[in-house]
Length: 235
Ligand SMILES: *[C@@H]1O[C@H](CO)[C@@H](O)[C@H](O)[C@H]1NC(C)=O
Ligand SMILES: [Cu+2]
View (cartoon, rainbow, N blue to C red):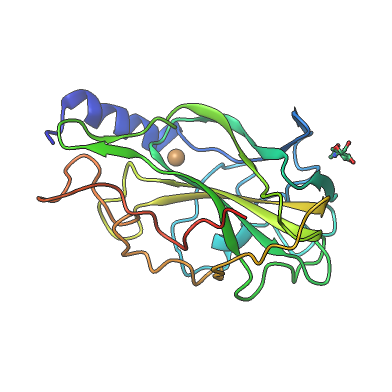
């Protein structure tokens, strides 16, 4: 795929002004106030991304250890649609996903989300064809929503929303991870066995073909986007 001047300039502009956070949990069709249910993130002012997949920040990107206790926990009915609303148009092309982790001892505990507890419940990957290259239907959205599987067991969880922005992902540590974790209490759930599970950090090495990738100059023989992280649990 040829690198057009417009593509190049667009990517350059987005490097400077494209950043965002996910301060609002969307639940019952409404976006909650900023940071009511989403743990306030370190980039709440700068909007800058996480770029080190091995850092603790890749999990929830909290501002500090009090972020958990200062955040409320939203009641969410299993099978309903929830999501995250960004503070900004999400102008970077990328891969979206959402994960849940059973929260022990509670969703507002700083220790929730440690260990190999996270399972993926949703993803939005770019499409690809040989003639078009990668197509990012999700580019320039303001929010993303997904369903909590109906068979998710009742209890408190962290829900982690993520976009892996890929406009500068052609070199190591170039992908930009936009992350936020909301605190939820799932009711009306079922007897599902969620998995496979992973940890943050741990889920990513940084060299996956879905993370270390020049989207403007795909490798010869490229045949489509490969999602990083575990398979989606559909309940
Ligand atoms: C969403 O709706 C359910 C069912 O009416 C309710 O129990 C729950 O408190 C609501 N959650 C929020 C965060 O408003
Ligand atoms: Cu950015």
